[in-house]
Image (cartoon, rainbow, N blue to C red; front, side, top):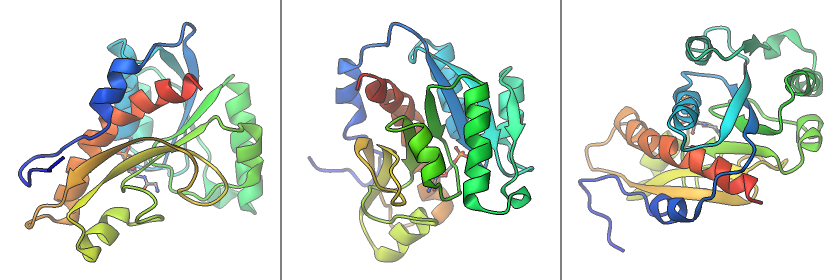
Length: 213
Ligand code: GAR
């Protein structure tokens, strides 16, 4: 398949979407976010549009300024601030996250722009039930600043990946990826904006796909 330079292309999502079956019981989601929360919003909208059979039990955010919290409140979802600066270790922080997710009876944990490394405390409490979205075609450009890394490398195609979380950062079984061409005039902002359009499509789809096992 050839990618046109003038458009954003999702290679995977349309074919996957035809095969997705909604779970019979609503999935109980706990969403974790550190930033603007546009992926939180995409999940909430997919639920409202009946594209995703789920309910958001709670939003956990770690940055007091995260706009994701405002989005949650506007959607009638409880937003719980757990500020990582208040904890002595990553393990203690993750322990509080696990406690909160369990209090809210969460089955699936969605890292929707969660910018903290996670420990076995969280991963072992929700084995194979944690989903992450990352703004690159993994395994390329792991870690922070994935969009900057892609631009600096000179690749002509990048994109986004939704995957199950394991201990190694930005690793774990891939659920869905979407490809996005890098345009000659792209800045980090313009490229990230086009990647996010794809993120908002594939993240709700990947949640359904993961729930199918
Ligand atoms: C998204 O682009 C997501 O892929 C990225 O943070 C952004 C959050 O946007 N995640 C990572 O870089 C994780 N390594 P949002 O707050 O608007 O959903």
